[in-house]
Amino acid sequence: MNRSSLIAFSAAFFILAVWELLCRSLNIPDFILPAPVSILKVAIFRAPLLLPHAGVTALEILTGILISLAVAVPLSMVMFAYPSIEKAVAPFLVASQAIPVFAIAPLLVVWLGYGIASKVFMAAVIIFFPITVNLLEGFKSCDQEYRMLFQLMGARFFKTMRLLYWPWALPHFFAGLRVGVSVATIGAVIGEWVGAQKGLGYLMIQANARLKVDMVFAAILWLSVMGMMLWVFVGFLEKRVIKWK
Amino acid sequence: MLSVKNLSKSFNDHYILEDFNLTLPKNGFTVLIGPSGCGKSTLFDLLTCVVPIDRGDIFLFGERVPHLREKAAYMQQKDLLLPWFSLMDNALLPARITGADIDQSRKKALALFERLGIGGFENYMPGEISGGMRQRCALVRTLMFERDLVLLDEPLSALDAITRRSLQSLLLMLQKDFNKSILMITHDIEEALLLADELLVLTSPPMRIREQFTFNDEKPRNVNDPRLIEIKENVLSQLQKDMKNEPV
Image (cartoon, rainbow over all chains, first blue to last red; front, top):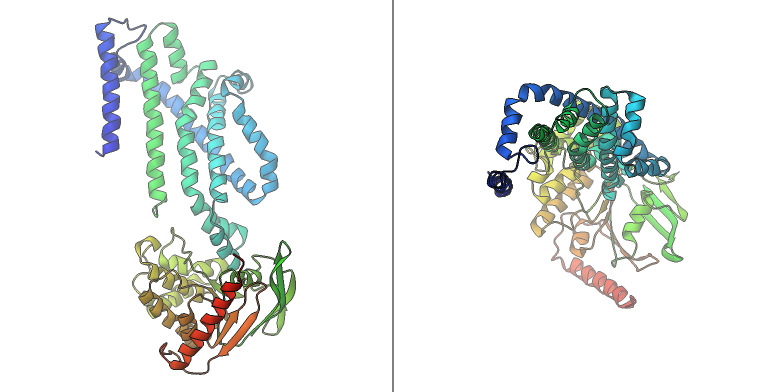
């Protein structure tokens, strides 16, 4: 274990220990603030209930990631190739982020229904922006001397894109993807809060209404684990793809 | 082979080149030397159309061409190897871009790796080798273009003295064995004297040829040759004069 991991684990352990001690010494009831050990017990022993909901949320997030990638990657390439399109699209991109996802969630449920579609769409909207912006910035950051080299070699746009711009932009792309996957859970869960029949967000709303706060925390714990797994997976993928760094 | 006539370029009404003329013989090694900022690199930028020409003409083999892009191989001070490709893939870049047969190009590149002293390193990544080896690989890539004219913009200036000396020999080999015509910019007078068939001493902007030295003797040369020492002193004094005339 390296130094930074040790510090992170120590800090997490310290916070959880203080939380546990406070709950026990002050006799805080479970419906106000359950102790970490109680939450962990619910998260593990109620896994048969939590897992199917986690599966639905994971499906929403993963589909959202795939859809946002399918839109963000070609859009970034087009915006890079045609700056006039970038200028035209940029205000809409910014606007899509200026509007809180909470504001459009009820509308999306009305338009796309209570099923998985509205949650997928919301996750995709959240992920889409960091990937698009980072990838575009990655293309733009390509060193002028390398661009000139390709021009002098007579490379056309698509060959330059494949051999130079894409590899150059990969670190930016993965940075955007990391941000995207870490916030993807927000989109899916908000969608589930507004209207759903399955998913961890739905479970949290149901548990909260019954004052089962330990179940709410257990759902949050599962969401965190899913987010971290996605983060770690993207990091793993990044290391496999960008071998020269 | 290459002829440049009345080439002019100004930035903010200030002429960097004004009616600049240059003729490059076939298979010749022409070296440009001049004070910093005199317009040497601008000349290359104009020739390769990185910067548009204000006026003037470029002729290649007697035919008027708008620029030398896709007609000349170009090597710069930086090796510009792509860090995500192995040395072999970097060398194959021209083939991939022009759509040439990759298997044949690979064979040719392998021979060049051997010839330039980096045989066995084909599968190394650029980050795993020294600056001199990287520059040799860049030279392989330059040779893979199969273009008769090679433009070299201070290709050895970032290297240490020993590596530089060995790469100078490779540049001579490039001219002799591969029948290339070379136009090189350098700041190193000794390097110019060792390599040049024609040495052009340039003035401060607007850049003009102040003096031209033609060398007919065999290469490699000895820098301690009294004639070369005399020319070196002459060139140095001309460059110093130009520096004194620069505004402070």
